[in-house]
Length: 481
Image 1: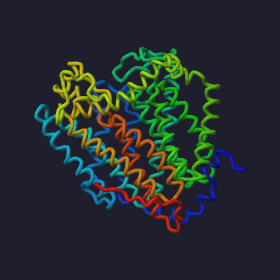
Image 2: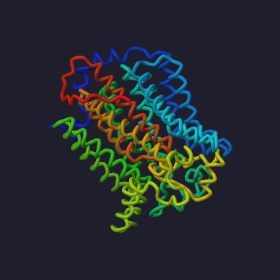
Image 3: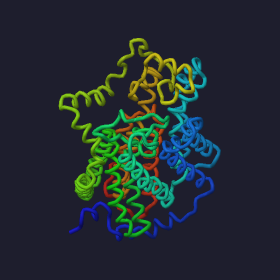
């Protein structure tokens, strides 16, 4: 009888069956164009992961440059993809970006009437970050599995650093420099149960939660390719990394990380169980068993890591907790115009980027809205405020298309292991695509487009494997814009 960990992380012989072909296809060297894009993608994720600690260590005058560094890297990726020779898949997605950008021209022009600088900033929030998916295609399609693995290895192994810093914050006093905000403010007012809601190496807790949510698809990619390229030894890392993720998810004290991860894994897991048949169901059950055992063991050994989250849960009665869920979920989906008595919904809104983080620092127009007390916390309200009815139609229409298109790509995967990874990535794409703050938070947008790019790459890897039996074919044709 196989153990739960063997069911989740298949034995070596299952990878050896296609090792000769896969290693041969992976051995083709990257072109200099692909290598530059690969390195920029690595720099992009590193800049997001360590932005917070870099801003704390650097003089405040340099903080704004560090804040915009990820945007600069994304612009470099755009330049490389436009001036280089991308493959047909990357070119197709560049075309998708171009068509979406053209649809936003009315909102950009109307924003420029009020503030040209804000128009550039706001347009960037919506149209720049799809370049991440284009770059994934340009760098790793059709067959650079090893390089894709090295990219996700960089992301996943950062868990050792980020969790160590989070644990240190959990044990250090609130006035320690590591626990202060990037502006040097005391954050003890955000503590729960006597423990801070830590942000690790990130600028604030929300960005740390985005990163942990992304681990729902980053970890499966790493586990699969790590075992494929390095044999059986990394099995020890598997349990350690899952344990680190559990600790990190709870030590934040944030329900966005705990409930978010649970929701994304549930959606992705259900899809994987449906697509994978009996084997998929076994994987999900085994994963639940391993995760539950690790959770119980860690709670028993290190209760302080779970104290902030537990205090926040216990601090809400059943009725107030229900009210909060309605406010966060139902209210976020339906109450798009709540509190807008002085700024009613219009056809083209009040300016792209006006409600985005940091816009008040570069735009007097955006600052006036903030000074008047306007702040749209949800993505839906932000879309309605910044671009009106027109942007709601264009922006959410585009996001819904990406969600459905990604699903069709996942369902067409023949390799069950690829499909399992794709299902978990789609769990992240679907939840964030429907409700995530993509127009406010560039880091979340980047993690989202990385998941989209991953699914596209898996599709090409899958089609490049000869002799694969078609385990399930749903005969779904991917849509095109």
